[in-house]
Image 1 (cartoon, rainbow, N blue to C red):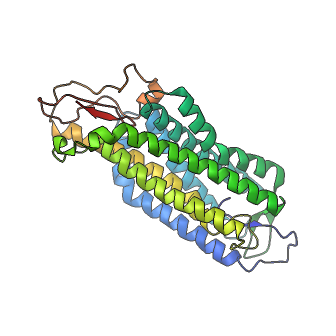
Image 2: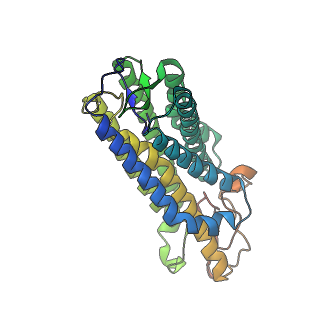
Length: 328
């Protein structure tokens, strides 16, 4: 559910033997998030802060800083806090964490919509599937989760009162939905970008949105798919901490998903900046969406029309930001 400690035993004086290892997993993933933020802060300033703020920029900021807020709150709970502060911290943590899930679902739906020639049906299906973890987590937290302030080393924690069998069924269902949503986006990305990828020699080694979409999107899918499968298998086999309804893969899955999305958006903005800086203007003055028509302003803001760096002998139409390229 989260890097914060989730216990199942109601006795305050019982400290499950797996709590230390689960805490270490949470600390290690938190350190990874902070480290990634520090090494990419320069790119964020150059490509996000220094550019006009668009909807995609706000999406990036929400994704990154909701995660960093969650990390800060989870680290605060490592030490003793008052019972009142514990309740406030846990609620803010849950809001930040689940808002991040919403950002991820919207990002997947926007990619599916832009890459599928504006298929509303596919975008809605992707949004529903990707929102399954968010919906189930909100229900789970509001119905079965109780905030508790226990002695060290648990300190400020949450107690899960849901039956383990029900929790595992919900876990399998939500992670399966997330896997299908990710698979749909990857499949649509491959179908939409295979034309430009088969003609990389035309690009002469120049940066390509299609390359970013395939490489970053494919890498994100593989990493998250492996973690989702591990999470399901470890939970079903009970190879997990006794105090948790999840597994040791849970903190990594929770923290890595927003990190990969931030990396994805930064990579798209870096390609944008590189093309603009090169001054190599193509025959076509701007990029157009495959299939004709214009995308809504929110989705179009993932990348404005910009040069693609193709010679005058080549006719090329490439979608912007989350779009697709087709070479004729």
